[in-house]
Image (cartoon, rainbow, N blue to C red; front, side, top):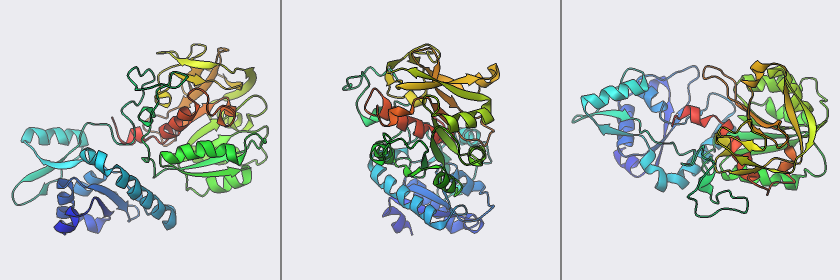
Amino acid sequence: MAQAIEDSDIILFCVTEKYSQSLNCQKEAEYAFVQQKIMIPLLLQSNYKPTGWLGLLMGTSLYIDFTKNDFTQNYSKLIHEIAANAMRITSNKNDVPRLTSNSTTNNEKTHRETDSPRPQLTTAKTELTLRKKIVKPSYYNESAGKSDIGNAGSYDRHGNPIGKGYDLGQDGSFTEYSILIGQLYLGGELSDAEMQKPIEALKVKGFQVKHVRGESVFLSELRSKRYQIAWVISTSSIADATFISALMEFHSGGGAIFLFADNTPYLSHASEFLNRKFGVTLTGDFHGGQTLAYKENGHLVAGHFGQHDIFTGIKHLYEGITICHPVHSNSASRTILMTVATATDGNPCISTFDPPANSKEGRLCLDCGFTKLFINWDDAGTARYIVNVSCWLTGIDRRHKF
């Protein structure tokens, strides 16, 4: 078994109660850590929460839960995860958590970091402990959260840095996430060909993407529980009376939502959801067509956006053409659905919701000018911003603290 581990780059291990009780399995896991192997846990037992040495291993890795959804979907996620890791092995091996010899002082530090009893993974010669490295995980780039980047090798005509390293998410790193794009606005300008631009950009990051047109097929897919993120591109009216309640259920269960609205009346789905959720409605038809600029703490300044992960690598961002804006029914809602960008007319045009740490709800982003998806995809910052938002919606930074 030792030779098999040495010859492998990626190790799959099963997470069950019996596995946790096996001394041989424990030793194999220990040896895989020593060899700095990438390890992918497969959760195979329902209602089982691993503790001890296996629980600690689970805490250092993204896992695939085979007890939920169907086997085909989980198998597909596993294949994508293996493929993505295979591409990253050379550059990321040094980021894999490892077992290292350490002093009593170091052991105490590890105990505090894991906030759980320290499992003993032992060999005949030395005691080894899992040490969490304080580095950014391989999902976000080093430039995460930075808009004003002054040392890039080159910049585009809008002044934004050129290069994938200035995106929020790393290429190929989001293979465990599936996005459902619900195109409810069926205007001829937003054709399947135009939608391929954002879809292909998302796939570069590893996302699995399903694009559907119309409420009926969207709701059917949403209820399948195969997706972690849903895009909703609003139109002028809601046909299915269950639409908003289904979206509310998806969001309250942890699903993240990217809401797209535009000028009145093409905002119905986004407005009704926001009204039900936060007491916020959408209105307006501002002819924008200008470019917003990054300004530190400039979230509420007309023509600017402030610091946020979704604006990573973006110093200038096109605001859209025909733009609506949110109307808050009370001051409290402004502290929940936060304005992060303000259009040139002084009204909010991009807002985010980041739930409390103890909430099961998903994240949310509202964009008030969806024509940027098809008319202005190549304008200032649009493509990077759309993909950045989708990476942020995963909440991966909460699972892997920086």
